[in-house]
Amino acid sequence: MAYQSTRTTSCKDSLTARKTDVDLSADGSHGRQKITFNVPYLLAIFAAILFAGSSIAIGASYGHMLGSQHSALLGYVFATVAVAAETIKPVAFAAVFAPLGCWAIGRRSIAAVLGLACLAFSFTADLGLSSMVRSDLAESRTSDAKAGKDDADKRTRAAMELANAAPARPTAEIAGMVKALDARIPQGTDCTSWVASKAVRDRCVDRATLEAEAGRAQRRAELEAILAAPVKLAASSVKDADPLASSLVVYAAAIGLTWDAEQVSRFTALILPLVLALGSSFSLVLVGVFRPVPRQQRRASSEVSDGTDGTLPGTPAAQIKVIDFLKAQGGQLASGQRALAERLNMSLTHLNRTLGELAEAGAVMVETRNTGTVLRLVAAA
Image (cartoon, rainbow, N blue to C red; front, side):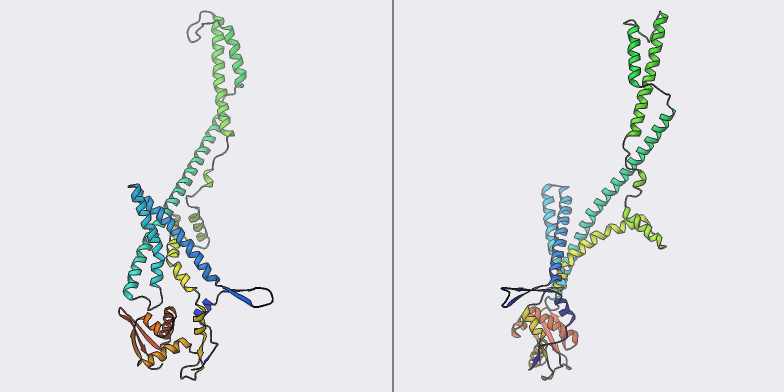
């Protein structure tokens, strides 16, 4: 069977080929060592780690918060369960989306149920903590708005009272005049009762007048201090508790759409929890998309038939190997995937991919059962 070393790059191969090659020379004059970095694969791993870490932290915080309402021990137990759920979640979905034939339908279903249950908890935890943060922010903004309005009203009242207040001399000047009058009033005189001496009575009246003026001067000083104090956050600066929703409503109105700010606010509250829950769930699936293929498997996949063996030119060698083996078995074979991979001297991953390509091309029918995999060679092959 003859093969040639080139073939058209498939979509899967193009994904694997998205990498940056960096050549490093050992001594500048001899052989070069080629180091290959699969950039999308590394970025996918980095993103998966960030998603998993964030999701685990939020889930543990939410679980501890729920459990600690009853006891400290229950808080730690809930946090441990949350960490386990957040950790197993991406693994379960990776198993669900694994190549066909790797898992039986029953086990895939169990993995899907487990993954969905963990996803539901993750979304609940993310949404719960996000809602509490947004609620605290809304309450803080509302409180700031009320404080700003109260301060503005207080300033307005102070300005009006100061404008209508009777004039008064400075407090220090009035205090000096009161002290001088006290020196002219006999000691022990009670100005609040009848005083026989007219001169003393007049001094008591003058003293009362000065005390009233001193009160007005003190009040003016208080009003002036209110107006001179720093202005608190104005109510107009905090019109809404959720500025994001208000901005979206304004943009929608600019293009002729009418949205309700409260409904938009409820929708925006779902965005971050959805991104975190779904991202942490399917991060390993994305990592699997960009996972590099071992060099020996890429070499085997790159070998194609030249048509001299009765197959179509351009057929990958791995597919021909499977087809020839099925022909030798009478066109049908029931076997476990691992055992079949060993008999064909192929890795399990490489065999799964090859069977998937043959099934997609209509050359082989693949049926997965609890007892193993049944392969049937289509007559046209």
